[in-house]
Length: 320
Ligand code: NAP
Image 1 (tube, rainbow, N blue to C red):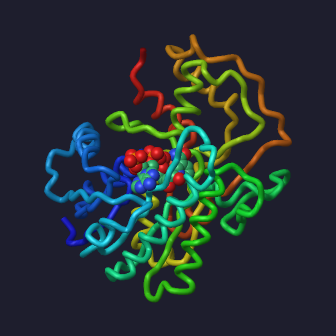
Image 2: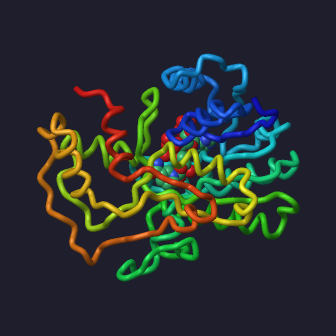
């Protein structure tokens, strides 16, 4: 047991629950925020499924990204904050501000509360969305130096993550004082569903393919990362001396199209093959590639393979 307390925002989410689990397993005290305390049981059930039976080190706080209420209490006495919460819907809202406002204002609320409480460092879960959606991907390897242009006409979720991360860096630069910020930019996050807590990416790219709802491979490739490795990089980034002020792309080696995912599932999990559509491969010119070199070399992060991440998702889903 360490004496340190970590705040994880968005404990009800796919990344949130795995992050809480790893922190508890490492002996940290954990505060977590939920929009409603009525969702507490989903967190407890997921942690029980993962073998946790002592919850004395876990405390729940009600707080919404769109309101000031509750953040001061959640962050009191906390050493580090992992700000994971942000709206991630399966479908775009009609008004982009439904995502942008909670993402941006929520990040600023968390940073301000953390600074006031004397927190050492906030690790913000951004996304590859804030990196890879403006530059032509042809012959380009995306790195942490790249930024999506938030002023361009881009989908609401991508804009919300870009605007929120930019606002967070600006806050740290202008008003941050001694507070440090580290940003994690994950690609598509897969890996095991715990206690039924899934996310939009998994519902679309794993369940959608397995159930035959996705019938064509869109013209892009995606990076893939396991949620356990995303949780692990947050924990490392929290205390690593060289992580302050840095952003890190979190991806396994290589990229995949939906066609590649469908073929992987058919080959490795033939018991699911019946409903999986026969798709056409994605043309080479649409390959989007990114590198995990910085996370590996600076943080010593060693992610699982993309295939292991996707198959772990499949193996955690109930078969109907
Ligand atoms: P998720 O399961 O949908 O989790 C999102 C979390 O944010 C939930 O706990 C949700 O709470 C919370 N949240 C949303 N709006 C909120 C609000 N207004 N106030 C307070 N909490 C709010 O998705 P996830 O995959 O775990 O995503 C976690 C983080 O990773 C997000 O920042 C996301 O942008 C980022 N990310 C995800 C992926 C991916 O492929 N999954 C890839 C890159 C980055 P409720 O349960 O109450 O809705």
